[in-house]
Every structure is written in C-alpha cells, then in structure tokens.
Length: 292
Image (cartoon, rainbow, N blue to C red):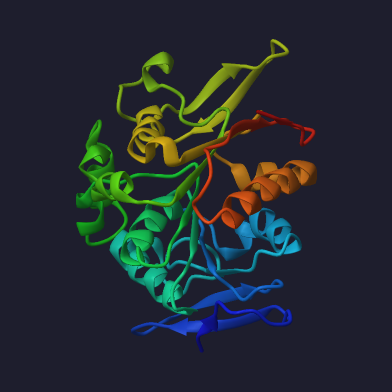
C-alpha cells in the first residue's frame, strides 16, 4: 500500500506491518484533511506510540503523519537492540518513507530519529521541503558502518567532535528548505561546564532551575551538535526552546497539553510555509505561552 499525498476525506487511523527480511514492524497513519505527507521517526528506547504528544496535536491541526517503529528500540520490536543496527534502522526509515507517494514533503525526527530524518531527507531531496528536528542526534558515518548497536556503535559515537564527520552537515548546507530545530532548555548543555569534555554530551547532570532548586536533567546531545546544525542550516533554521524540558521531550509534552498544542501550532505554520518565509525563533513556557 502506498499512502498518497493528495486531498480527500479523512480516513480512520490505519495500522499495518512493514515486512523486512525475517521480521515485520508496525506502522501507523494518522489521517487529516489532506493526504499524508509527513514521516515521523522516533528516538532510541522508544517506538511510534511515543510520538503521540507530537503527532496527535498536529493531526488536530490538519497535519497527517506516518510513523513506524524501528527495530531494536521499543517493546513492539521483534529484534533485540544488539541484533540490529543504525544502518538497518535507516533502511527501515527509508522503507517507511517510500509509503508516501511521490515522496515525503516533511520529515520529523526526535533524537536518534533526528539523525535518520536527515538521511531520509537527503534521499528524498526532490520532495522534502521541511525538516523538523527534536533534540536531534548527529552521528559520524562510522556509526552507520557499525555492525550492530553495542560496543562498536558506542565507540563510534564517543569520539569528541566525531559527529563532524557526518555527511548530513554537508547536506544541510545545500538543503533549500526550512529546518525547524526544537530543543529542551536543559538539553545540549555544554559538557565542559559540567565536568565533561567538549564535543561530547553532558549526560545526566544536576542544574539549578530559576526558582533556585536543584534538578537532575538528561542532556545526551552535545552542545556543539545543535550549534553545528544551526550553522549548517543558516538563515533557513527556525528554533524553538521548550522551557523546563530536557531531552525527554515526549514525556514533557504528554504532561503539558498546552505546550504540545503550542508546539503543534508552530510546526504546522512552518509546514504550511513549505520552506518559504523568514526564520522564526521563540520559546514555549510551561503554560504554553509563546515568547519570540
């Protein structure tokens, strides 16, 4: 089955399985007024359901989406993490993208899914006009060559500034469309400010929040990754910061429907502009208030 990008009445939510060599993965389409044109990719230790706080509010605003579960990460995966690889996840993501005819116009990815979204957008450069990256990872090409998740993959992504080997940065420099970078206030923290090494992630650290209290946050994305993505995309990059949020964006949005709805509003506007117009920068507070 191919999911068209044309117009037509909304259909019931559709679920099916994509079959690969010896295993199958679940796929879901959330329909909206226009045919599906957006592919959404989840992060590590997750699955398609974890994207609900992103995708359900978008559906309510008329943005349909297709999401599939990647092997090795969630409870619905038939393969264990060490039985699959980043390269296999990329091939799965590309197969999901092929369901959107003539190709995806929007690719959204969170964390590991952000790294895959960049590769999918490059493969479908003829149709993609918008990238939505939520706390995106950026991996060196050696990570895609690792035979499986585990020590080879970990070694590849642990080299300080190794992500600058990623071909996705070169793609972003020539990508003509819009890039919407969504980050948590407490993700992408400078590692050296928390006893770590520049070019690597801060990890799990304790920070002081505005009311003076201490809070433990998870910041697995190196500060330099976000800076390099912004620099590569240049004037085409819009940014949104979720106040009070660390890397666990889906959980943050699930607990705060007003924030999820405000984020969906901004994402929908970016998509509707189809890559045109000036960049927009702002923050979304815990109440859902938008501040440019």
